[in-house]
Image 1 (cartoon, rainbow, N blue to C red):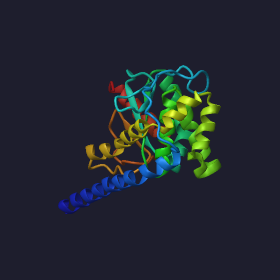
Image 2 (cartoon, rainbow, N blue to C red):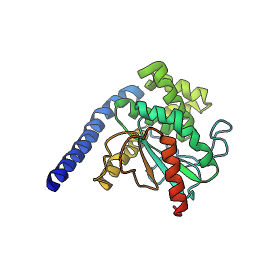
Image 3 (cartoon, helix red, strand yellow):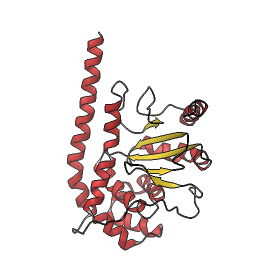
Image 4 (cartoon, rainbow, N blue to C red):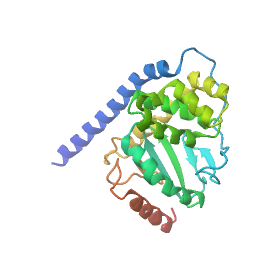
Length: 250
């Protein structure tokens, strides 16, 4: 019986890694068609911790992790929450709209930091991640992510068009020339692909936990026992985990 369970788990993980690999091969060609009409020299711009003025993120430090993932809050916060998410995942959109805003005061107070790990489940995720990286380079990753999540139910696949990303950049007050150059840079696509490795790496690290999709949360690097997804009362569960980790000193 134990061997059957172990074999089933191994097979499930192999299927997960295979799916991630298939998606990666399929989406790269598509995202180039979506975003690029010409080949431009890669930008040398680096992620910035510059914060936009006003809005829900006012007063919150911004930075990136060693992996290049965008982070809100102090690097010294005792509890670090990572969200492995897709721009086209409806449950991720629900989390972004309903639960994530409730955590911003905890981030602002220094109690937690919050890291967003872009994860590809469709070709649109690649395009969205590329655009978000280009906004990140000008200090507006979180605002661009808000825009993408808001646009999906409003205009569907058009959300991930070049035209819409340029319009969003204009609305956010970004440098359009720098943003457009970033969209076309091969380096940006490479950064997006590197970010996408996060969920697969997490699944390999925790083979006995059902990490198969988005959203997946981790608390100080550890996923919940139930794996991917969220409980019904997500904010209650998250705050309970924050309290437990804070009481234990992280």
